[in-house]
Each structure stands twice: as structure tokens, then as C-alpha cells.
Length: 208
Image 1 (cartoon, rainbow, N blue to C red):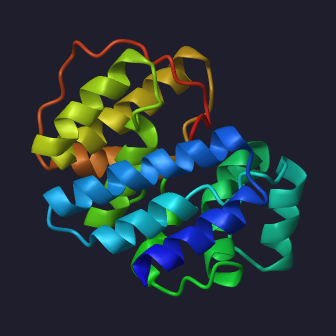
Image 2: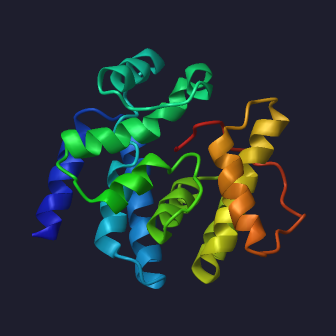
């Protein structure tokens, strides 16, 4: 039964996403499911969230903004300048409307997979990290984060957020407040962060 659900989702995704984006989603789903099993989260939820996290990625920036306005999806003024970031909450809405997902935990993980947020659940963290470091990501830090995620998921989240901020700062880009909220909350937890982390080769929005 579960396999039929997954295959139906993959079939629908293949009708809208590019081959590259679909392959990324499959890799995120695979890693998320494995991490969920390892960290005693729900593997089914993780696999669904991984598959659907980018289901709105076929939309352009204007389409994302229009979609949010039509459905009254709240977004802050920062998103007007970086509308690509709306693909997270829009994907969560599409997961519910198009793919029939009503699980609030899955929808939360899809919605915050790019920026993170304050008060992230275990599933939220797994999808954030899996999106950043799935096996197809070739920048060096992806491998380090992926290795860390098996032993210390919180530290993997910190490294993920740090990698995102390093890229944004290096390229003089705006850092969305949700990234800072997530960063501050996880750092306050007392986890050490290595200073040896180099610049991420990740492009903004890549695989997000």
C-alpha cells in the first residue's frame, strides 16, 4: 500500500518537475527516510516530505507570489524581494491540495525546508538537512554534514544553517530572519560549531 502511494506521488511529480529536480527529490526522500529510521522518527513521514518538499519548484517567481496571494498564504515583506523562497510554503500548500497530504508534521517540514524556523521538530530538521546534503550535492561541506547527521542531527542542522549563511554573506545576499531564528535557537543549545568549515559551493536555492 505504501509503495503504491509513493509511486503515485512520483508519477505526478514527473509531470511537472524537471528530471534533475525529480532526481533531487528522490535522493532527499531516500536520505530523509534513512535518517528518520536512524533517529527514531517516522520513516513514512520523512519519505513523503522528502518527495514533496520541492513540488512547487516548477513555478516562476511571479507564479509563486500570485499563488500565495490567491490562497492567502501569509508571507513577510522579505519574500517580495526573494520570491523563490516561497517555494517552501507553496510546496506545503500544493502537497495538501494536489497530493492529498493532510499530515501537519509533513506539511511543516516541507514548508520550512529552505530556511528553517524557530521550534523545529525532528522531522523539520531531517528534511532541512537532507535537502542540503543529499548524495547528489557535490560541494565539500555536503559530505561533512551528511556524515555528521548520522551521529548528531542537531549539529548537522547547525552546519547546514551555517553553510547557507556563509554563502549568503559571501555573495552579499540578504539573510531571511527565519534562518537567524533557527540558527540562534540551535546555537543556544550549546552545540559546538567547527571553525574549519569553508565556503559552501552551493548556489542560493540549489536543491532547496
